[in-house]
Image (cartoon, rainbow, N blue to C red; front, side, top):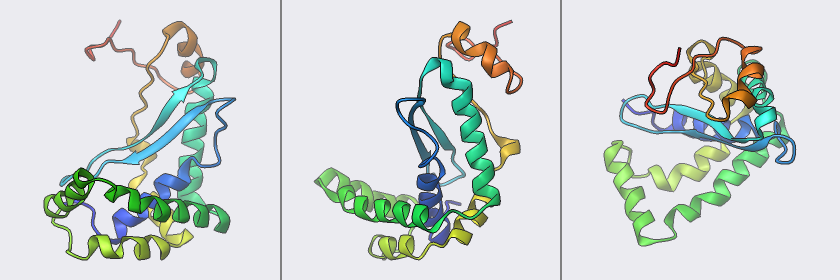
Length: 177
């Protein structure tokens, strides 16, 4: 069953909040988060384009931000900025006929209420810091994370091994011995 109503609204907000303060493009990377909605549980991803010699630092920072989001409430300013960004970006989902059709199709595919799109902005605006923390605790489970790094092995492997076990795979996903 897909996440609906309050849960997907909260996921939109905490995905935006998560890495907002964590990185500067000069030092580390361009970072993005995304929760992929499906009729069955889908993945949440956080990642980006990391400067090779900062890959392990970037992974560590993502893990730290997940931990903080699960344990602490986001600051008022951070939460307000995230909600404002999501609300301001919402009309862009309807900029073309194809985008309007995609929004209408999503209502049917995910069996969402007819008023879903009319109430989206108000639901985002109503999200609290406590809501974000509780949702992160429920859906961001550190014991269930898979970290995937693609890059120059010689540049990233030694520092990644300091974080934890590294499993190497080839381009087809087969283990490399």
